[in-house]
Image (tube, rainbow, N blue to C red; front, top):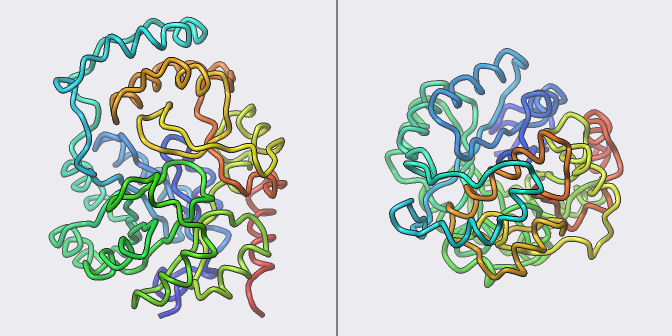
Length: 346
């Protein structure tokens, strides 16, 4: 089935779901432009999920997707880790952001079951997941509600597992992609397959449509992905660069100024491997050697990141970006969509 028919969209262009950097305006604009707007719900409580999907529905009548992180099994809770040494290691960053180191919370993340209940109650058109394979009960609930499910793979084996479980399409994301490496069968550092190598192998291995992600920012990337057998593309960095995203002006400027070698893989900001542009926060945390396991590290950096973001201080936030940052030259969603659409046949 064509991706456009599967997802009820006009063009096979999907917005990458940004955990923490999604905005209603950006998601709605991509959907209104004929693609599939996506919104990342990482860490959202059920009430916030309800309100966010309601806001998206109020902004656009076109299909929308929301994204959840599945548990990989290596997550820690506040009782599993003493966060004090890690907080002390980040003391200079809290001081620079003008906030005090926080007290440990009752939990780092809301329960997935409660998040899923909230998503299904709100009934988005599409649910995308990362870091795992949705279980049979989740897939059955989605089917009963008419919700399409997209799974995300960084290897052929992960794509095969998702296909066997019954997802509607697989997002195959190459190592060029910005943000977190969402591997779940092997360590992310051992799953760094490039997009050009990954896409045709996944296409050959699964029966469902494959959406190519990683390093795609203009018409040439779209045409290349389709030539490799992909049914569509997922684009992150090029849309993150636009003024409709929730990225700070400094973050958008950093993407605009980035060259091909200006992104790195790091665990410093969240405890999990992710690709971004180095800044003071990343460098100082890596220099300490004190990086807490996920999601403790994400929680403890989140406090100073939030304060810095509100103040427009880009040197203390996560500057997520992919290797296509040097191609992300447009600052409006409509312009990015027009550029990407130019790579489609016909």
